[in-house]
Image 1 (spheres, rainbow, N blue to C red):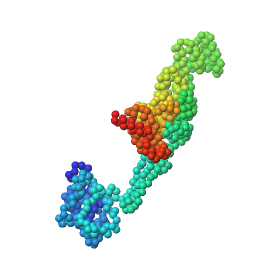
Image 2: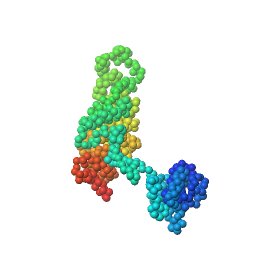
Image 3: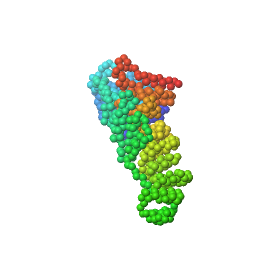
Image 4: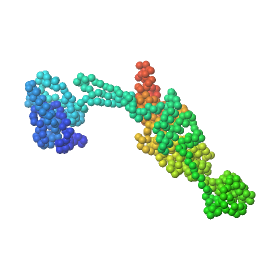
Length: 608
């Protein structure tokens, strides 16, 4: 409007609402309905000079100067006709209402609503609401309006202004809100002013959402797992149910997910402790099929022979050293006998070549180990060249040679096959250099993570004792067990991933009762809020207590926001504590000690 500094309240051009459908729902304040009905008896029509100039002077002074036909206000003809009939009834009763009666009698004119809004400092949007939404006066009893009037009551014939704050809704409607106790509060659409009883309904969210997948997933988990009445058999049963229902063993990812659940079962049974041989047995059991790694003959150049010389020494040819013809088929005894004859003549090099050609690697390695180191390395290289590239023996020999195995850099694709045998051989055969062993396992995990095998990568990280990190720290290896923190948070913080990580924390506590995962506490709070949203406030409060116990044992300054959020949620859920039912009625207003202490620590931190 003119004179207002806020540009958001400027009206659009007059042609904008000429034919707009919703303009028919505009209603006019009570103060000028009678005046308008007396001044004009004809229905409104576009292009005619029908607007009440007094109304524009009182309510919209900026529109009073606009030419006719530019008006934005339109009403239904039926509404106009009903207004005319109402005025005629009032005249029949001897009452005449006119907005100009005050001016004719010399009485001062009532100030406009716009001026009242300006003087009171209120927003002028109250008039606009009255144009689009019915006023409360539209719902008055028609019987009362027909039997009572100002003239009969002896009151002055003056028009009263419309209410300063119009009703927000035209009709009684249903209002709902969510309560912290797992309830949905519903206010029924009653009208107490008309004698109807007010009705408020309380519904349990647990009952409303009883058939949803999310609620079933939350209720199936036996959390929180730090309860004294929890037995680890319940946790093992839950893991086994997860393996049977949510792991598709026909896919690689399903088998990796099943392996993680089986690892948690093993940790529960062994109270959080494990050794390499136990994990190797688990890995080989989960191996879908034992691959047959193809052996090959040693390369000719490794034993000092050209391809032609290698072919000339095949079976059925004359041996120039011994002067004998090599039989077509040689038994193991004949091969060893010829190896011995070569040593009779002192031909160690020829004996090594013969042993390597006929797979007598034990004889060749022992003989070369008693010779010079260069010869031993030459025989050892010839032996490893006979192994397939993806053979787990290659991984072991490379690790024992002080190198990062090639499998740690290449596993995860179809050409290399399954990654489990390579990890099993690294875990079961620890080399002297523990740092090398650790780096090899972490490298294998990084390779698998880079190829999308998140569950497999996290299995490797657990074997290497990699600590848990945070969602925002992308350089960390893992934040939730079995979920990549490099994806969107809604996909990352899945309920299953939080439950799986809590089970791992529980397994650690079986070995060390006071241990916990500090970065995991924020996801416990998220899980508690989900429990409250789905109508399980008692479990949510228990999670808040566990988080508070962990935070009170730490420096609160390191996680101040987490402590404040836990306090806020616990204050809303504190009346859901089952212990309150056992307390005397006069003590039910007391708060748990951990909540009082946590709030005091938060206030102290804020002051500091």
